[in-house]
Image 1 (spheres, rainbow, N blue to C red):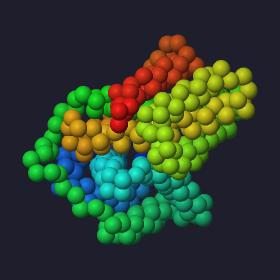
Image 2: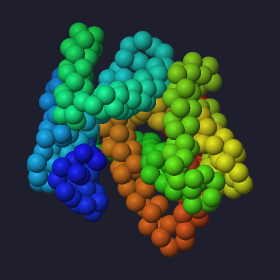
Image 3: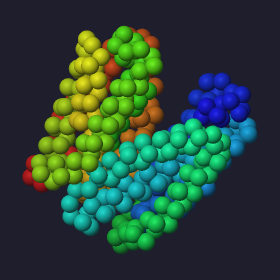
Image 4: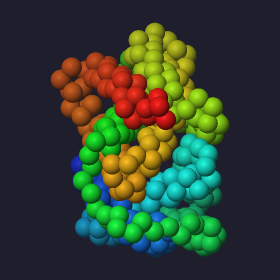
Length: 349
């Protein structure tokens, strides 16, 4: 994005509007991806979305006008959003086929991929390669990964007579709300945590990103152990225990007197929140009030909406009462996760 900003000669306001195209494209595609996965199975949706994502990626480096960049970001968001939904549905299908928890590990690898991708492109840019060549190399690796994955994807179709569209209802609405809150908390940390700790005088501006980095590392590490932990204590205990640890982490962060305590709080939040989202996806895939694929599409869409809209809400509230007070909204909202754990994951199961 810095390269695009310089290439097009646009300011932050225009760049913010263009980035909104990414979110709009993702949300629109997520709305339809569940229906397509239900009708045709997740395998073709993953393949089409994955190859399309690789095809669109290089255009981000050569779009020459704000309009063409906006259209490219819209398409990029659409392919990314549909791939995200289809992969989560497929992950639940694989988990059901194997008969043991796997989603935490899948989400851990998603986080690890984010680290690897950012590090790889940073390395290429540091070696003096141009942005276009960097993304072409990245797109080429994506195509190779898609061809390698192709044979192993499950061939699944919706059961005969099962609807391809359904309005969310019952426990799906509860899970969707919890997903939005959980993703909102992560989005708030991503967008506002650096300003929070620098504004409170805990670290200098140059070290503002340390907290989110520790949060991400802790979350990724915990997700690699999450499947075994879930198999041992169950979804209900993961939701209650994990969310309470995350809530405690937010409280410690907001009252932290020194930087070491604040950094420990970020780790605590990452450890607690790590496996809540995989559990929510698993429960969406096992509920009976609507087709699982459509339910997972709803959860993904509301979660992504939480990431997009949540930080904006935090910013609006912070403008009136200050960022620290606005951040107290997050643990207050997260209390709903343990309170609703019995509805989402009943003890009788």
